[in-house]
Image (cartoon, rainbow, N blue to C red; front, side, top):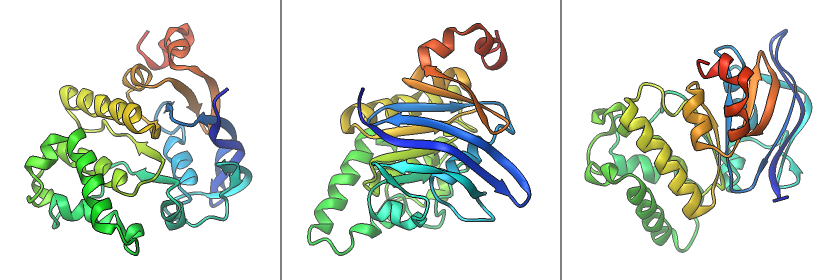
Length: 249
């Protein structure tokens, strides 16, 4: 079996007195695309926030279990250190780009962890080339203020900004939200290309279960804070119960 880059063991988390993750366990292989699917209220985003080590009140408090990344616990790792160490970066729902800055300025901000590298300029150029090769529209609009981009272009920018960090794993929260079907397809095709070219691990939380299963290799189904099904995306797509509950039959 390929090496697991991420192992979640009996993870529990809560907002105040309300537990939202009830002993979640799963693993992600290095270099794969994995999907976390489930209905609204399944605590998918809470799980991503826990993995990204975000702090309350945005994220729940982890009250039990462990998160192992590259064979080391990251429960005590601060969010910025995950990026500093080129581990994991979160692309949050809603994009959260800096609207008053240009596309290029948004991308440059994400290279902060490289600022002391003697090859800083070359690193920026290399990573921008990767982003623009995946999302040619961003190159066309590189001098434009990002608040003037379309929703799809802003989502491309959010993903591109994550790529600029150099992290080996990207956490994506609802990347298709608000996108027209054509743009949604383009986004996921770009993610597949990225995964193939750079061997970057991608973990995606996606409300559109069909799209998530079509474009991923492994999937987990989350229901009210617990994983109720796991396996290859093809296996889950053909499971009659999963199809009825999440794929419209």
